[in-house]
Structures are given as structure tokens and as C-alpha cells.
Image (cartoon, rainbow, N blue to C red; front, side, top):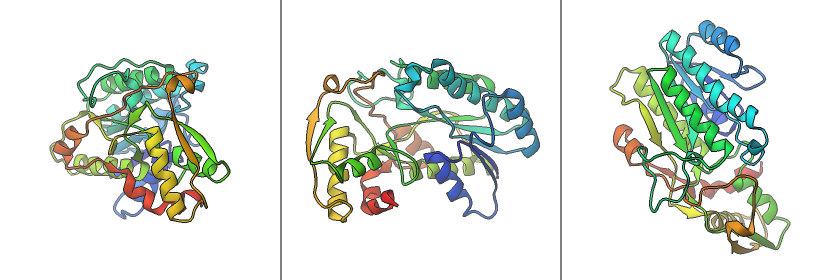
Amino acid sequence: MRVLITGGRGQVGYCLTQQLSEYGSNTVLSLDKEDLDITNQDTVKAMVQEFQPTIIINAAAHTAVDKAEEEVELSYSINRDGPKFLAEAAQEVGAAILHISTDYVFEGNKDGEYLETDMANPQGVYGASKLAGEEAVMSACEKYIILRTAWVFGEHGNNFVKTMLRLGAVRDELNIVGDQFGGPTYAGDIAKVLIEIANHISKDEPVEYGVYHYSGLPHVSWYQFADAICESAVTQGVITKKPNLTSITTEQYPTPAKRPSNSRMSTQKITEAFTLEASDWKAELTNIKAYTE
């Protein structure tokens, strides 16, 4: 495979670059925003024409959910226009594009798990710009996989696990939202899934292009996730004492952007199509020291 990665220094992009480097048969070009401005159509086209990828994996995004409410133009430029230009360039060279999206495309008021066929209804700029990016990719390239994921965490970059470890080390009391539910997802698992799908495509195996959900199990609230993180941290000696956690409501922790109260997504489709199981986020907390290095 000739793989072009955008957002190469982000949580998932970093894992993609690391994992693909272990495969000697692949040619990988991993670029971050300093290397490639995906919002510049001419630059994107020139880079893709020069590199001639067989797979483009777009891990670049404007993910500052609350800032997006003010940075509307920037959000759409990165989350809609960038994916569109990448997908158009992919189409021109006959490449497939794998594009990461989000649970925030949903309103979050459904009972039970969201399916790929459920109607999207984003409640904020971030979710709306990501949905626009999905639609742009679908329109621009015949060979596309859109992977919606949620609550991403990993050893590289900023995320909820690192925040809890930092706060847990210095505070005795923490208030954590307990009425928003979803599936924490390890960035390394997202990378593995994208690489597995890319391998299917590169081997000309039958692939059903379209939208897939991939996130972690079991589904929990932010409060339950925080509790598991702190338990693991104490057990492994990362923090000396577990802080007293209090479950609070979304109303008690107001934010500029509205979050979905239900981010539970079904991963049945991707399991049936590619034999890929949901991310086991609890297993990834067994080496929590790696998140402090």
C-alpha cells in the first residue's frame, strides 16, 4: 500500500504512523497541518498527484468542541472542505479514502445504540461540520469508508484519561458528569481498524464502502469512566490516593457546546463486515503509567 495520512501528529494519526511503520511492505507519508494544509485545494491536489497514494486516511480534524461554537468558519474549513479536497484528489488518482468522523453527528436522545442508518441531527458546530465533511466525502469519491468513533483516548495527545490522571494527582474531590453515556475508544484500536480495512481494500477483497461505527465497550458514563481510570491509577501506583468522585448532571456543568447525552453506537456492522470487535477500553487502562510518560 501507498498510504497518505493527514493529521499525523494527532491521537489516531500518531498511532497510524507508528503501526504502519512496522509493515515493511508499505510506503507511508504521514503529514500534519505544518506539512499539509488540507484546506488548500491546490496544495492537496499537488501532494496527492505527486505521492500517488492507494489509500488516504484522513485523521485531521478541528476537534475543539466548545471553541467550534465561535470558530465556525475554521471548523467548516477543516472538517468539511479539507475532507472534500482529499476525497476529490483520491478520486482523481483512483485511491480509497478512509475518513474519521464522530458520534457528535447525532442528537443524542435515542434509547439504545445508534445505528449507521439512524438520522443524523448534530446539536453543535463541531458535529454539524463533521457531518458536512461526511457528506462531502461521499459526494466526491466512489471508494470511501467513514468511521464514526467516540471518546477517543491514548498515550499521545490530550484526552480525558490524561486529564483525570493530572487532576487525580492534585485534588481530593472531583465532580464528573454522570448523565452522558458512550463508548471510550482507544486510539490505537482505531488505527488498527483503519489499517485492517485498508488491507482489505489493497488486496482487492470485496469491501462494502460506506459508513461504519467503531467505539468501545462496555458503554459507560463519563463518571464511570473516570472512576475506572482512578481505580487503575491507584492500583498501578500512578496516583497515591483515589479522589472522591461525585456524579453531577450536564446542567451542573454547562459548556458552550451541547453534548449528546447518548453516544452509544452499535459496532455490529463493522464486526460483520470485517470481523473487527469493539475496542476494549478497560484492557487499555492496565498500563496507565504510559499515559504519564
